[in-house]
Structure formats: C-alpha cells, structure tokens
Length: 289
Length: 293
Image 1 (cartoon, each protein chain N blue to C red):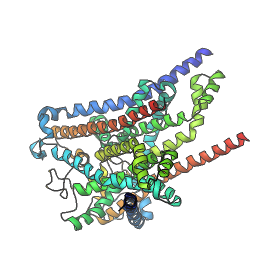
Image 2: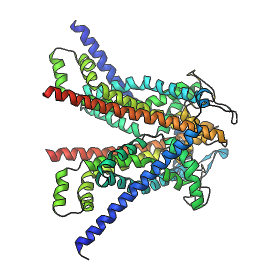
Image 3: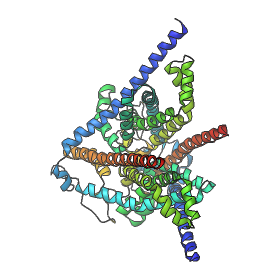
Image 4: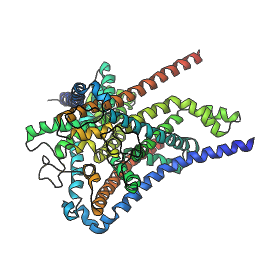
C-alpha cells in the first residue's frame, strides 16, 4: 500500500468516526428532548396551572411552584442586575486595565463556574441558620449572588463594544463622566446588556442546588418572602424522587414548563441580538450612501 | 454648578466601585464562612477526614473519602466519554457537515447547554438508570450512570467552544496545507487542532470544573451510599450529592460541620480547576499578543 492511499484510508476512517460520534452525541441530546416533550406534554393540563400542591392522588397542580419560581427569579433580578451592571461599569469605564479591575474580572469568571451548591451552603450559614428558618429572602440572595458575575461580565463586554469616539465626543462637549456613561455608553450598549440580563435570568431560573437549603420547598401557595417558597426546580426534584406516579408525572410537567421558559428566554435573546445586528448594519449602509 | 456635577460624579464612581468590591467580598465571604463552619470538623478529625471511609452520623463518625472518591471517578468517566464525542461533534460541525446542517445543529447544541441540569438528572433516573440495570445488572445507580449523565450534560458546552475555536483557524493556513496535498484529516490534526489547542483545552478544563461541582444531574442516580464501591456499577456518592441529600436533615453540630468541610473541599478544588483554565487562556492570550508585536 502506498503512503498516499494509507493516508486517504486514515482520513476516511477518522472522518467517519467523528461523524459517528456527532450522530451519537446529537442522538442522546435529542433523546432527552424527546422524553421531556413526551412526558411533559402528557402531564400538561389546565389543573397544573390553577391548582396548588396537593397530597398524591388528589389531583394537585403546580401553581404554587410556578408563582414561587417567578418570585424568586424576579427578586434575584431586582437585586443582582443593578449590582452587576454597576460593577461591570466600574470594571470597563473606571478600572479599565488596572490590576484591580482584572482581578474582579477573574474572580467573576471563577464565581460564574463555582459549584452552585456551595453558594447554597454559604447563604444557609448567613441567612437561614441565624434566623432559624428557610425563607424566600435566602433563596433570592443565593440566586442574586450567582447572577452578579454573569451580569458583570456581559456589561463589561457590551460596554467594550461602544466605540471610544462616542465617549470622546461626549467628553469634548463638556459632559461629566457619569453623564457620558449614563447617556452615551449605556444607550449604545442597551440591547446587549438587556440580552445579557435575559440570559442571566434564564441561567439562574434553572438552578436547583442553591435553593435546596435556602428557599427550601413548600406545598402551599406562598408569597411571603419570610417563609419557605416552592420553586419548580426543587419541586421537580422532590416529585421525581417520590414513589407516587401522579407526582412523578407532575414533575415532568414542571420540567417541560421550566425548560420551555429557559429555552424561550434564550431564543428571545438570540433573536433580539440578531435583529439589532441587522438594523445596525442597515443604518451603517444608509450612512455610507 | 461645577461642584454639583463633581459631587454626582464622585457618588456614581464610588457606587460602581462599591459594586465591584462586592464581588470580591462575596467570594472571600464564602471562603471565610466555609472555613469557620468547617472548623469543628477540621479540629475533630484533622487530616484523617479525607482518608477515612466510614460515614456514620449515629456514631458521630464522618469520613469524606467516599464522597471525594465518587466526585473524582464520576468526573473522570464523564470526561472519558465527553471529550472524544464533543470534539467529534465540533469537527463535524466545522468541517464535515453540509452548510445547510451546520447552523441548525450548531444552534440546537448551544440551546441544549441551557437546559437545566435537573432535567438531565430526571431523565437519568427514569430512563438511563433502568437501561443500565438491564445491561450491566445491579440497580442501575452508581458512578458509571452518573458519569454518563455528566458527559451528556457537558457535551454541548465543550463542542460549542471547540467548534468556535476550530473556526478561528485562518483560511489561508488551511488552504496552503490542502495545496501541499494534505487530506482533510491532516489539516484538522496538524493545522486546526494545534491552532485551536488553547481554546479546546480551556473548554475541557472548564467543563471538568463544571462536572465536578454538578449537583442535580448526579444526585438522582448516585444511589447515595457512603462507600467506596467495588465497581462503578454500584451505588456511591459524591460531594455535591451528599450535600444535597443530607444538608437539611442534619441533627448535630459535628455532622453539619463535616458537611461544611466537604463543601469547602469542593469549593477549593473547583476554584483551582477554574483558575487553571483561566490561567491557560490568559497565558495564551499574552503569548499571542507578543507574537503580534
């Protein structure tokens, strides 16, 4: 066999192998999606959205968990987003390439990938153990701590896309720096930051581990943040590991609603970004003319 | 007039600086709180905590080895499966797939990375574990099943970043290699992978960190048994799944402290893994800059 045919055979072999791997990997991922859709859709019912948790066998729903999940996600957004945006602003506009700003960037990257369950144990020590009970506040705190570094990094990246000439123009007009940031830089990076917020919400909304010992769980409709609050994720965990078939089925329903919510936010963010990209290109074209 | 502006200016700058310092504060606070809470266990067991196998809450005896062992082995299994498959997917997406397939498959893989890990865990409990039971015997729970779920979970993550890294290879490099008579695989192995190496290794290490600290995907299928299993098909435990299962049912000070010690160990190991990945990326960035200069 000549060297060249050998190389061609190896080439064919490896390329088919990588195609095979790709097919196996994608097949597994789609198997999960299919299972999720199949079990989730068969669990969907009107009851699921208007009834609260109930003992097994008595036709309960998930209203309490959906409302609880929304409360936790909105709470974490209200706390985490302003801190994240301000910190990202500092890193990009004031700290720039200083060692301190770089340190904050590195630490946020580390925090973004840190095991979320550790954040749960931390908030437990801080807010649950001293007050003597699980609470919605603790859950919101845990999610907000996870959200800050995500928002910080997106803000940092998105502010970086705003051209420096705009900043210089604003300063040249005599605008103080905070006004330049507020009226010029933020305005230019608005869509990017909003998309980052959407993705950040999607990310923390799917979290279970940090909620296990902070907001805990509840089988009742609860809006008092000082009490344990149900979430879709923890409810899924409890229902799926229970021996009752109707609870397991509700667990799949919760999985579908949650995955739909998270994927919906992701897709929305993508569309938003690409639309913005297209309009920007159009504006540039017009200007060139 | 000027004074009012400078006051606002100062206020805004300090507000942003304060928010940035909060990140530093959170991270150090996590470390400090974990150390304080874990101190009784450190004091009581000392170094033997990580070599002791027995975990018996009734006798106030806590050894972390089974959980640490389980975390390492399940992560190792995950990486063994995930790395070749993910790189295969990345090569397929960047080189082999026809143009009309590239974007839909690529986007759906990216979206799969966004699915909450608890969904993967649930699928594992109801579908993968029974399948494993039928194929390998036992009850289907254990390190192998957990590792497999972790592998599937980190697949989209590694393949998306690897694909992006492969796609950064300059066209001219690839074309010169083809002109010299290289096959497609030659180009991938000798041009694209070396060029994208930093990105690939970085994404693999980040995925490793993620798999190591993952809680929900594995807690369902670990079997929650505090033992070093004689085979990877027997029930075991890992640090995150021990925490998830036992943290809210603790009845003694030492028990809680031992769990905090496990959390501390998990946090430190993850910290090192992630910082290493960061360092690798960073080092490369510096190198590339120097090359340009």
